[in-house]
Length: 302
Image (cartoon, rainbow, N blue to C red; front, side, top):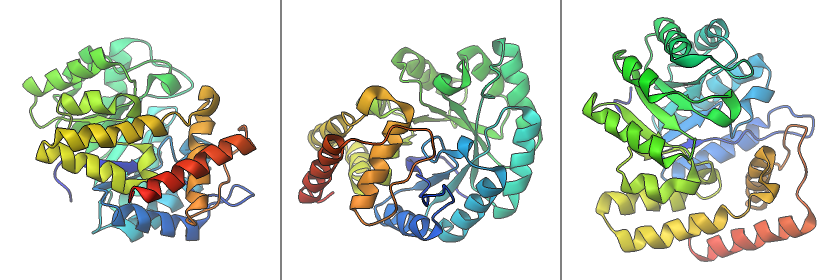
């Protein structure tokens, strides 16, 4: 069991066949590539992994398959988010036999919670349903609301809630998250929005959950190493690469962010480029932009 959430934790893409069933051979290749690239953690059943569009039975199988491949190589984080406390508890029971190091849970999606009290009660119920450590996941864009600082102050009293992944991109909020360490020093604060990677790094976050590390794990591992060594010249050079990469967000749609990464992995020979429907496929110019970026990154040793 890993003691603290830390470092580069990769929210893994789910390789799919054309009929949207999981390409497990592609998943095995991808996980090996990510682990060899220096990731400290693997986050299965993430937003990047399209988990909300997958059947619950397939989610369970994905968690078990991933556990078999990465345990002993990286910490295993498994997403259990869903629409209700009961469904989250069911998800937890289905993955507990695989002994993940951490569970990751957002607020319920589709029906947003109403106020601080509901959020506290929801996560309290989740914590009561397991002995495993829990990472909270703040992603207001998909849940209809965020996890308030007031709620977090109350939830810090639950020892099994060990940290938070913030994907809001709100730097004022992130600064308040870091201030929670005054209340509870062991509470891990993870940055999940690559647009503010440099800013959150300078605030001293405990790690990153970058979807781009599916494609370029060495780049993100190098950034983490530069932070640990306080090599800010290398840090600036490497984060500039991330900023350039984040320009490949075609039309700003959710699925295009996943689609270009899957196409890049296809170019690298790791898995198929299929994405769950609906989504808008990349155009030929967009594919060429990804191809050129992948080639450039290869030339940089990434």
